[in-house]
Picture 1 (cartoon, helix red, strand yellow):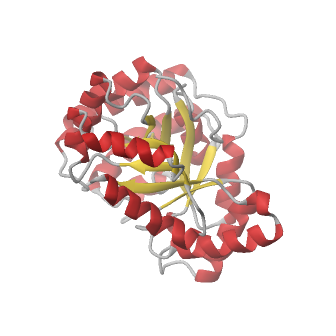
Picture 2 (cartoon, rainbow, N blue to C red):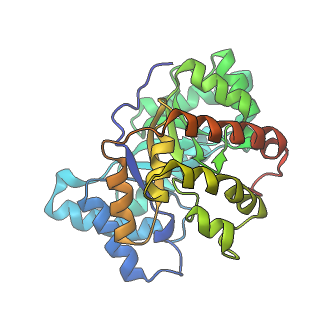
Picture 3 (spheres, helix red, strand yellow):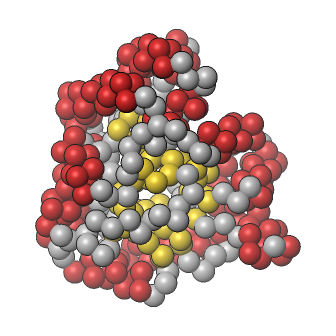
Length: 305
């Protein structure tokens, strides 16, 4: 598969933290401006509370002064019918004040999974959405419980020319493409967008701080990964995670969210001129992930991870 996502920067700012009530609106607005002023691409969704409104205000203010500084956006579009996707595009571009989505993130749910496997008519309708310019490119979101349909569609050639890459959680504690799909993506040299760069918190916090790991499996994995991190000699968990993502050559960018400017700077800095982790460290983590995928991930109930 060709790599039509080669223009992606090494780090994309995830805007999850710009839409909740746990962060002051003024801080959220400041973070939006900081990311835009830094020239970062943005990953966002209507699912992220009022993040679209925060971003829309920042984009409008930027456009009045520097029209050429309006950021490219990666937007969650979900699944379903082509009409569902069109409606979701409008639901996002309206508040953002944009005419189109740079990259649309499809998900094999709500009937789209069957269409992917069968090569049904929705795929042609989605291609028309691209041809009309409403979306520049599509990437397909993957979870352990949705990996079967993308794998079958990929092998059948139904994604050729429509889906330009794949996007999923990829960090030292999570690899949300099931083993067989992961192997297929690597064999095909498919472009990958890695999400959730640092898995929500430093590994020692996930291991030791009650409540830091939102599900028990993350705490259990942190127990196993912390010694690997410590032996690596890497200075920080952020650097370790960014270097881990780019230890897979197919990874084109990593998407990480934060509400703090210093964390944003660290994420962006670590992604500049990034060096992969040592091969022995990567292989140890890959072995853990392969076991976790087979024993836990593919058996999980949807949205419990």
